[in-house]
Amino acid sequence: MKATIIEKSFMNSSFRVYIDESGDEGFTFLPNEQGSSRWLVLSALVFRRENDLLAVELAKQARELLKKPPKHPLHFRELKHEQRVPLARLIGQAQARTVSVLIHKPSIPEPENFQQQKYSLYRYACRLLLERVSWLCRDHHKTGHGNGLTELIFSNRSAMSYDDLRNYLHQLKTDATVRIDWNVIDPALVSAVNHDQLAGLQLADAVATSIFYAVHKNQYGEVEERYLKLIAPIIYRHEGKLEGYGLKFWCDNKAEIARVLESTTK
Image 1 (tube, rainbow, N blue to C red):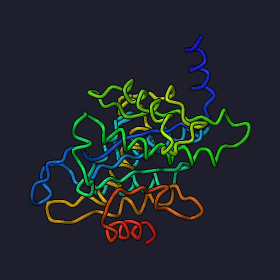
Image 2 (image 1 turned 180 degrees about the horizontal axis):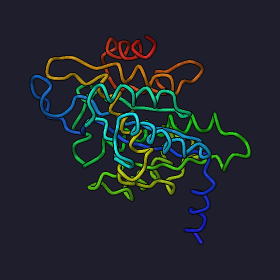
Image 3 (image 1 turned 90 degrees about the vertical axis):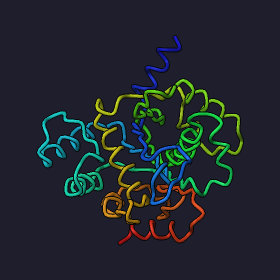
Image 4 (image 1 turned 120 degrees about the vertical axis):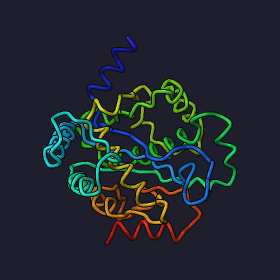
């Protein structure tokens, strides 16, 4: 009986959300940007349920444009710069919205809190992400278009337990400081699928990696903002405000935050 209820919730959901990350969770920072990445970016690409096939069409257009075979999995990191640009442009024109959490790990005052248990930083990033996804979906739900719930599809991290993630979300329900709208987010509607199996996950990968490149310095100290600029039109804004909504920062460098935000408006 319980399984049937969950299946109906999947079928009647109002939104489908694809989630992927860029960067790692390590804290071994070496000179010249070597070692662990300084940033962890977690991104969600949000479609209305009735628009979900647009993800498939968008990926198809991208493959045709980039001269890739049909069903070829798109991995943003594996593309050349001149291929990433048109893919980012296509995503920035989609009938969708993105939400991203940008964690600057050197800004974390007590990193040991996230080193004692594996994937704890990732789970915390999920909390911040789902807060904002829930606000977006709550405020844009159309009456008569599904039950208001979101289907959350994560790019599968083979070593991580998604039962543990569901349990973590259940625990958050008892925490009054958590701002997830639980009328929109149901931990039972969490699933994990391999990146190459869903177009939406491949596009979410492109979003997360585009934003990562806008903050991650290469070995020459340079960042690449162009992909973020192209995706900027579909980043979630609340009453015109981007920071804290479509882009949530955990970073103590205010100048860096200002730079990233400015790059979305140029």
